[in-house]
Image 1: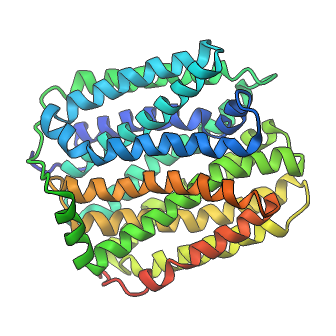
Image 2: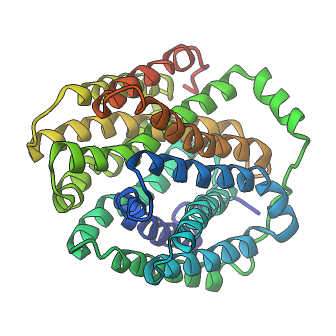
Length: 390
């Protein structure tokens, strides 16, 4: 398919559908560990459920290029969306633990797959010279929903009636489904490359820049996996901050960097600095601010909001530069490389909760964040040695 301008109505529709998708996913994301805890025997096993979901996600992500080649992105997107609506309705209205846990795993898997579908649409329409700006705008659209959604979830949540949030998520997913179904019937898929896995590994191993940026993407996903699962639990169960304050005040403000900075940083990466400097500074900020969380004991909402705002400032720098740098190296037909990168997101989703589960057997809860900061520092030998794009 020919590349189109970001101002084209079709691009705007992609952004609209992406926003609705992101809103549906962001609405329950910070209550999901608390929701699923109600169907489990101990707090420690929450991470295992997320890891199981990530295993399924990794499997589907690995076969994603074959799915696209067989069915095309349009049909694959609508199928995943339809199943996601059903999963969310089950989470809203069923109470059997086995059914709920199964639907939760399905929901987690489908949400990740639908992101890949949108990822593919955006890459098919992007031009390399504007990749930073386009990716920055795409991530800003997604992240705007993440800023607004927790606040609305906090308003909707009373007496742990999580069903309202999952029902709202199903409605938003249905709206995104309609946008795609009506406007992308004539989408023409690129020629998807589906080489053997060892051939993909060979390409990645031979390119220092590609495997370095994929590792950076993995670390960012690892960071997110811990922040989403463990920060709400820690603040609520250990620090004593209410879920309404976490969802209605702390989270929306803490996520603002993703909306405020990514478009600007993407354009700077395109026209001035390149990605290396922004990427490296982002990891340093993430590492230091995440580690500092281990030593803060106050229940002050203002203090925790400020600290988490700093962690996400670093994360926003890493997010936009990993997206920009990687997609300057590939095109829409390179689904084997794109899928491998996104599989690392799923792998981080497996390893993050598993590592957290193991560490909680030996460490106090607060020291998880010190360990997270140390892990983030392992990015620096890679971020400092990539070949910059400017």
